[in-house]
Image (cartoon, rainbow, N blue to C red; front, side, top):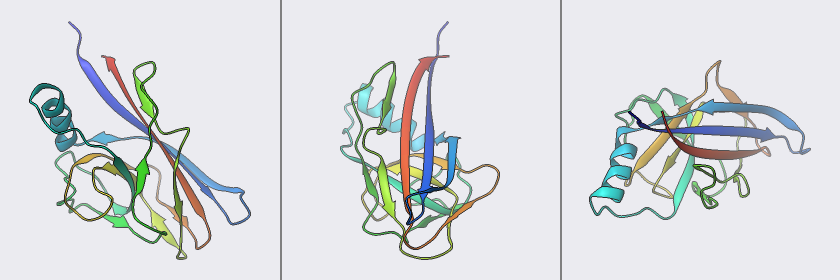
Length: 162
């Protein structure tokens, strides 16, 4: 008997103003119950497709499968970057994966000592209305970015028969 498994991998790379890498993280994520329900509703129950999705940054705290964009009491969002959440510009699926590796989400950090604890993928460019698809927590401690740094984020969603 086969079962479907959906998982995500995040890659964060922080560049200083001199364009040198300050730090990198590669992490597996949590697909929220709301995200799983969205997939099932969209494919099997006439739900509405999301286009585009957006990448956001976690400031502190830990994710939970029950988290939604409107209610995620275990963590807070980092907003100390230029503009809103960044659009997830993905390529067509290939080898049962979808990624934005050719068009990474890029955050221009505009404050010093910004704690980054992970990221998330959601259906809203800003605010708390919408679908929270996935959240990633850094393991091994949070990282910091400073004013003038650029944080590039790649997200890859894969599906396979587990």
